[in-house]
Length: 318
Image 1 (spheres, rainbow, N blue to C red):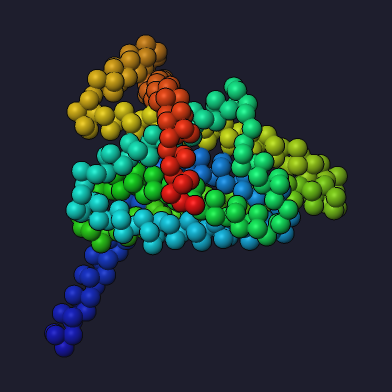
Image 2: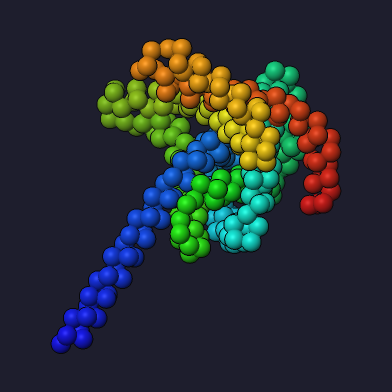
């Protein structure tokens, strides 16, 4: 009997440890996920464009296929690579983060450049010439999954740098939770966004009350505004996150001059206002300066990416 009680006591102890581990994984995943907020916003802002122009009945199937591709990118391809880097080449994490940050700066700056100096897109022109909807759908899905791979790599690398857990298994579990959670959050939000106008149209035409029909018309009118807001917020988030990653990476590599000056200027701005506003103003000032640096670095990268890296990548992947 005493042996059985001892066994039950051991089982209870193991259960407590397991429960604590689950809590630790959840807490670490939440912290790591928060670090990736800027990339997540951009991902959610970018994805709806891949279903524009398709029959409404094809929107959710397309998003589902992109979601599966995103999970494959994160869990099957990127998670093992991230674990290998973390345990055998941790020195590579900072340069990879800076590479991803540079990509975010380039994307954000390119969007601003396109607004200021509108130019045609060869991809859009090719899409307009493509008369086969199924072929166009396959192209769009493949393009979305390729773009997702880059953003997913950045998300997983940022999450990995933020994870503080005692062993490799909890590290892997935390990354998996972040990967799955981010994917569900992004593409679940995208599904809601792309179907919102259909919901609004349905209510506008079929709601039994004037209030319901008015709500439907309001949703239809609000969707272009929402897409614009998502684009603006996504671009700002890219530049802020990308710039801060580059600046922090330079500090880690021993080039802390820029980061120290930004910190000092933000500190001065925060302490130039009443104490109740100090934290908000200091954070806002730092985020703004990180974003300005992101714009500047992105503008530098535009000719490099479009004239050198882009053609080489296209030649290598086609």
